Image (cartoon, rainbow, N blue to C red):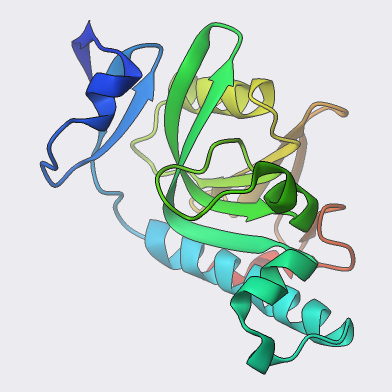
Length: 202
């Protein structure tokens, strides 16, 4: 990750031309995010697909039918997003932060409260944020991102380490927990959901 020295306001950031790179705005600094390498995208796809299958099954158990559309499903059970979901939110020392999350889950009550129309960045930190950590990600930058998500209103952050076959679970109400090996990751935000780690790590 390369940080530009000049600090800019959110309005200038939003007006930047598309240069083919991914960008974040963190405390006035534009950070350029190079494309991830290796297994990152495959692990990200496996996790988001598992959550989406869970949401589909849960929605059907509650009476939802495909003819009602995705909007009705989202309103009933929440929404999962992946592939660098843009988030704009405030933390105590930065009123207009923009971050890109690998995977997010937004519960139905948060969707209703925020009232997002699908345009622009999602204007809050989703209840669950999942980051797939690449070998090139610096520990300090990862720790900063976790703290920003939690300080910005996120309830839980998963940091997925493909090289360690482990997930570090962070939230505001409990110490960091680690699941690895043959363990199963679960989340109270997704009642009944479990993710065997051997389904996401080859």
